[in-house]
Image (cartoon, rainbow, N blue to C red; front, top):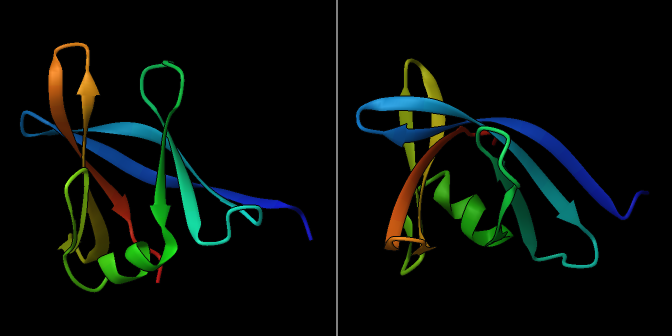
Length: 106
């Protein structure tokens, strides 16, 4: 078995009423068995990496979870189940949030 498994997932960034596609790779590495890493890439910029607890992701597709820098909640959109991720962090202009919507695989 490989030491890491990864997959590309469909993700969009919510900006001013529009959804912008974001290249996203989900990575599970056995060296960190309780987490899943997401690499988000927008407009050819270097990837932005976030690590999520596996349990939090599993709960987030069923009910709202999280507080502080990360919150997750399920949502049905156009007959598809999606996961809404709100991420907070320091940017060049201050502490800001990003809302990402990704297909949810159960």
